[in-house]
Amino acid sequence: MKILCVVRNYAPHAGEMKAEVPSEPTFFLKPDSALNPKQMPLFYPDFTQDLQHEVEIVVRIDRLGKCIEPRFAHKYYDAVALGIDFTARDLQRKAKAAGLPWLLSKGFDGSAVVGPFVTLEALRQATGKETLTINNMGFDLSRNGKMVQQGNTEDMIFSVDRLIAHVSQFMTLRTGDMIFTGTPAGVGPVEIGDVLEGRIEGQPMFRLEIK
Ligand code: MG
Image (cartoon, rainbow, N blue to C red; front, side, top):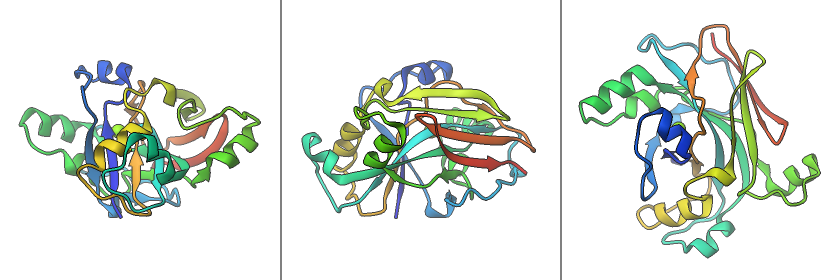
């Protein structure tokens, strides 16, 4: 199983990172050992002084596919989750400045928080929003009860279907693979004692403590 993550998929986040908006999707990988699917508390790692949250919609692939056409991409997923792409920002900055891969700053144990997956249909029912799709889904993250990030998939630079079509030209997608689809603006630091809570369309999706 692989965890694909998209870089800069919301223009305001690219702006806050002082990075250019990409002309085609850019991906990196997290190892499966990064996963924290049960929302166990995350122990603040010793190797960073700047641990930051990036809340993201996560899509789970449920069919084997390669070279998937954009118009068929929707057949390759059915469920979404809300997750956090935790980033050791100081390590990432150092790697970027040296032109080196940033794997360790984003691939450490516990860096991939993923709440439970729910089908789009279940979300429509839970929210009463019949028009809800992967392309108009609101989500947010609060830190100690205060909202710190808020986004909507309609603001993605590259839609989920476009991401799947693009990456599957290079890599076979397998059942169970996950795609972190990018973070909106508002990324920021966490501290020991913080409680992070994520919602999709107001529905609680995860609660995580930093210890
Ligand atoms: Mg991210």
